[in-house]
Image 1: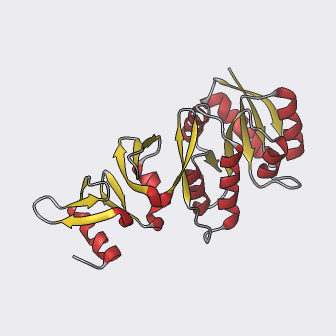
Image 2 (image 1 turned 90 degrees about the horizontal axis):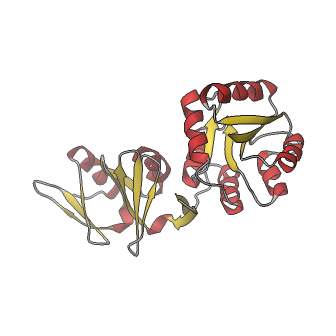
Image 3 (image 1 turned 60 degrees about the vertical axis):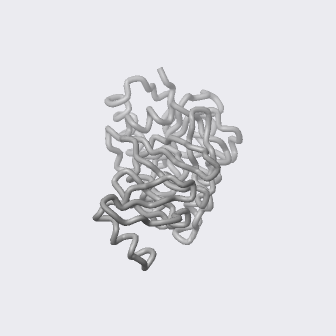
Length: 247
């Protein structure tokens, strides 16, 4: 049984989330329901939970300030937020787990399962904080790629291309490194499309800076900087023309 604490300054949200956990996640026991960040801080110190559901915007001390006050994070973490679409991209870029209000039961089950796979680090939380507070003008130079024992922060410019593998995405990075993440290529596209990446095929998202050649013929394809060939779908060719102004 996983021991969880809910921290949100809206009492109705706390009660609803507790009820949803009981319905959808029977492996989770809510040991404390807190309607202030100060109470949440004390309960974390007292109860040492396995999992914390944390609202971001709260009076007196917001979610990030609470985490900073705690120091080392020794529990799995799911942010609960009403932030807009830009913030959703920030979460995906950072690979931290989050739930948008109003919370969907299926999303809750998925978030709990993912959150229990790894515990976030203070650097990861700080990175997310900078993205959210920076607004749309903030463009992080790195993307967080989770692996079994933690998170690798990779420079976006070093990512050559991404390949879809069902509900996972494999990143191909300069130097031959590869990294598999539990995000769909559609999720990755939302994060990187505005950062010089283009979806050229249902399976591939490429970094325009790493294209060496475009080869026409029966099977149009790109030759990337690592000399790998990436197919270009017919309906994606116009997107390349638009971005590059060639062909």
